Image 1 (tube, one colour):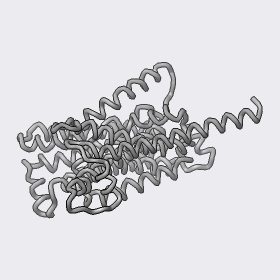
Image 2 (spheres, one colour):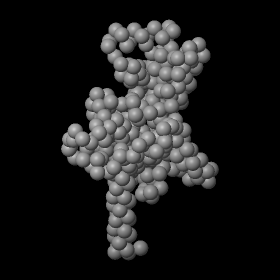
Image 3 (cartoon, one colour):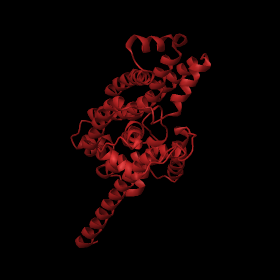
Image 4 (tube, one colour):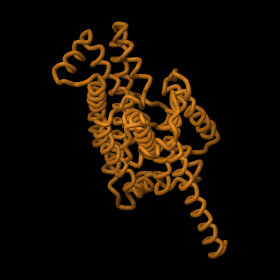
Length: 358
């Protein structure tokens, strides 16, 4: 292949990738507006645009609904989808495992334990003490409990990661810790009262609609900081694709890279879990969709694509779960499973042919 033909091929690939990223951005914008317009009742797009542009109106009740309910719900879905997608991409690259997801370090199990202790602990006394002693609302208390529970599992896992060079060993430790914590949660659930079990089940279904602007003031900066860490670490992630020995030959500190990547992925997955409940499948599915769309493993392209596609899929899942025009609501985790399960099945079938994805 001549130099001119190589340059022409590279130009076509770059042009195709720019078009793909532009289409992903357009799809995200459409999904975001649709998530605000559609619901149990439809809201005209003119009202949505007026609310987004900062206009106020005493005669248009839709603007109040948009700003207090639908806009925070859409922002939460976009943030959670982007966070889970990037966390999945980081873990798949770090562990060189196409089926790794954000929760392989046991973060979801830890968050579940925190919520279980709040809801079930000592017959609900812990939850009552937390709510009354600190003046917390139920939703805020659940966020705090999930965050502390996730940290309870994350800290020892990161300590082990700092001492070990083998990423697979860290993966096994995280999985075993997650199973042990899940066993404790099962014991708490087994003795639950019906009203406590109802609260637990509601959290376990997952939801983007329980987050207020006050909680978003915490969630937004946490997720954005972790996303920036991923964006500035694309060079390191590309090096990890070829293995830690290659990264070492480039003069990179692989131990620090692993710790930073794990911390970033944990922060993203922990924030999404704490504020939205355990949202499954997005973390494992979105990175593979991004690779399929772009036909590349270059993280300089995968990171922005995964952010946009993760946010878009979360918004679509939220829209489907609300059954637009109906009063019923589907469990969000059921919808994300229907989206993610075919992708996971496809990855497994490809892997059986010896093709590594990720």
